[in-house]
Image 1 (cartoon, rainbow, N blue to C red):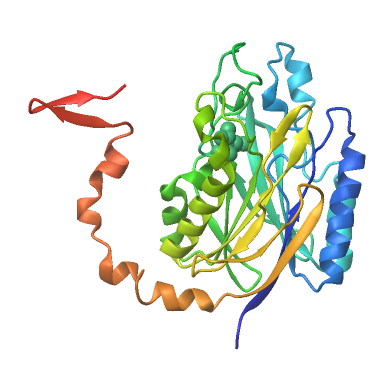
Image 2 (image 1 turned 90 degrees about the horizontal axis):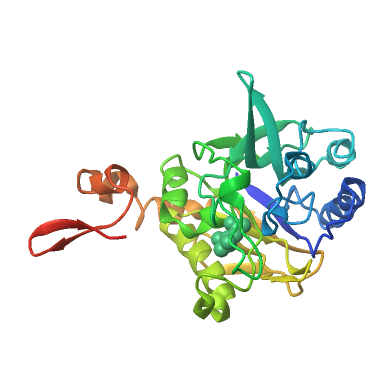
Length: 318
Ligand code: CDV
């Protein structure tokens, strides 16, 4: 029996700093209703989908920083989204800033959850690759303080849900081949990735014109090389003076984009994904059991940065 998942990329346009959770959740619910009306089983929302992208600002007041975080999921303002999902029988993937207390220590993560059609959280993922910087860098047009406001998560788990093997990653994770391969080794069939990507890259403005190209390049490569669907979903448009790419899309295991958003506002793009299409890639070109040579890949986990050989001696590249 074929395993179809009809999935929507639930792209958001900008969220103002003054927007309340209730206002944002109303927008998420409108997209959910639209996706449900189109027969979707699942809708994927962006990274940090409940607030503006706050790491663009340097804050000193911890209470102000914490105002962007969720202490509970669902909480009073987000309960309505869970209720609607249960009522409609649709699942969702949602990114948010998570504040939790572990053994008496406050932890802050950039998190995504996968919620099934009964409104139950089936998988939680905490962003591993946190981009940007930890200190205030006033020379930038805007900050990217994820390394200050979050700590990294610890793994790329997958879950059996929606009739397949589902995984998540968040924004910068999508640029790292390790992200997809760790899930590929667990048989992932659909990777859901929310993102907030400014068009302008302050340390490398020469990349600005390539932002959309790089967005699709990495997700299409990750999909093909692991025989999986990838759903990439933007918070797009001009948010608090910073322009963010759109380009939300659904990619098949062939690496081809099979659906994509056309605007930089609230919009869904959807595809009926036959998860069994993954098998053709997983059993042939990317049959890991047959073709991988893990005994030659040791450096990938042993070494973090680049060491080059200069004059026969190992030299660490700064
Ligand atoms: N939210 C992100 O992780 N954004 C990064 C930017 C800073 C480059 C990204 O990889 O899209």
